[in-house]
Image 1 (cartoon, one colour):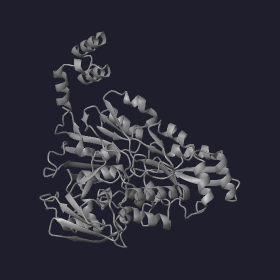
Image 2: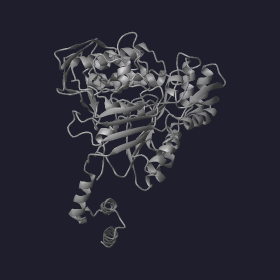
Image 3: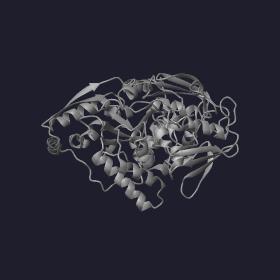
Image 4: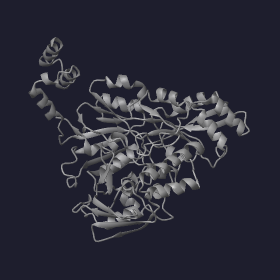
Length: 531
């Protein structure tokens, strides 16, 4: 007990904070020796408190961002702002389950082709209008039709009809069954605005969310204030939120360490150990579905050649990527987008390994002795350009000569991604296999980053949505992962954990969501200032 007595003396003399005293005593296995009053005081200090202005520095902003049905890029800065002010029919909780948001419940028929959502009563938009079925109908219809430019269009292509059943029930009729349809409605694409809203109206941010928009400068900053009529009792905790777009990771970290902001996303992994030791800083880490990719447009030469694609897949050292880029804060990818934590992850697929000799073999099969290509790269994530440089060095051993074309992050998602034939990319991931595969690989999706168009894949994608038999569904998703891995233009070297830094006076729930950055981009309504 000698060490504990020393610990007690340091605490009583004010040389050790209450929090550090408890942490060190717990590490010694002496929780029972901590005075009850100290534990009670700490519990009170950590309990959710109302008030204060949250300031956050987030990456991923773009001057092309829009609040109009999320028809823009939809990266962290924009989505986080969106969910401060807008709501969906459903949402993900911290366990990754889909629960009701504007919908309090839903019903489905046996074939999963008709879904009825029962809306919460008494929910108000920021302009005082009461939420009704027509608001949902108009907001979802923004994404439908041949002329729609929505990036979410492919996710709801199966909707044949939406109609109201009274003021508080909405009926969706699908052309084919979708057992995961409530998951689709939780996507950031499908927030709800008042009926009849024009594009200009959407930009005003009139929603039912926890905060009311006061300022919105796309790609720069947003400001919001508490919604006094928010339908979730007791939320939010903050009075105001200011969200700054800060692309540079060092600038975000400096802003947190100097007290200019309270929250930052995506701290630099290469300096994470030192950052975690900084005074007044807490780092939060959680596993998720996020993954780095190098997409090839398979309808564009030379990537329309199967053997060229295979050569590039064997020419990347995934283990080196994991250790160099992520310092082990993640795990290996296998050239498909399904995370190992998901229900239908194809664990039986052999892990593809770095093999320059096999890469050379496939180049010869393509009639080539070597390959000269360009890869476009921007720091759209911490180390985005570095990943391309590292890949270039690895591929050189296979006779593949890459030129890394570095480009700015602003405009990357509109001018480079899905435009240039080979580039750096990443995904947040999606909570279900269907949502991920539909978003990234359906021929109907605007986010099909490899221009994948495979009849067998499309057949399986539709069939798996409505399949009730678990074994059959697992086989279908396994085959889809195999098709992408072996035939597609999708190179996925690593999955990464989510990281966020906060000031030590920020309180967070016991469990943080892992479906997107900073608590699923819902941190502004789930976090608080400690007393």
